[in-house]
Length: 401
Image (cartoon, rainbow, N blue to C red):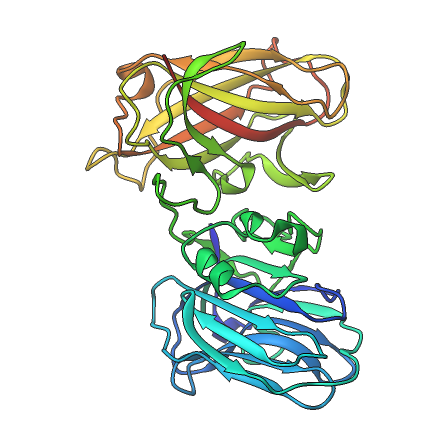
């Protein structure tokens, strides 16, 4: 999921804290899908409320359809614009780098290149930043989709910006300097920051839409799930080939009774209630290295609070394929189930394993086909007696050798 903003409705996301501290260098980057190419629109802004001091990236539909970055540290503005224009109704990547006060200057990028620069040096203090805003607010509101936005307390290089524009997750680019990361994929309120805890409040209720494009190829690492072209792997538990490693941030909530995205010591987790049957869904592409054998879905889970008890999980697959399934309706196969005994220490992670036979048991999914995985905690089952939330940290998809 991405967040969909309507300019006429004055929609935006905000946090009453200035992410990135008060000292440059700072870098910002994320994906945009603009509907409006005629207006001046804020994409992201970190600012001080009492004085005009800010870092910001804008989509200048009113001025050549360029991406522009502005830095006003002390009354002297440094700004730069990309050398090419963004387009309407397509996913593109925007980024900016704000150098240190002693060096000065800014850089702005569209799709990893088309760099604009301004070497104007600032001086003095950045001020005391008190607001972080995505999508406008107040004024110059954005019209379109935003996804995968992040802020670093570092000056990213040209190469690192280019890598991000290829679809690499911000978690994999200078992670030690990552100050905030909003996938904007949860469909929940608030939108969580899975790195710094700067969760974003929804203002005027921006809605959800399809996420920035995610492909699962062996030549690229892309946001979220990682696909592997590897020989069979062996361990004390499995002789398998790892096909996909899927984090909770890629989950798509169903229309009701959905697991909620949260954090545990900055670890993103999906939380399943102990009194109602909650589910989550992942949409994937079956890697080309899948050889048509038995599949295992391996959830990595922990207990939120309990130190004993079992949970009952049901996992179902749905083939989307090539003209196989109308996505306006759901058609998950019958769920296969497993009871998992949680560790005696809250927070310890353990693994389950739910197997599927080739053919109808896995809804006849073939390599290269899109499919979905639905995971449900069967809390009402007599086999589920663990109190408190179940936390899902990730799932693996493996082919049994």
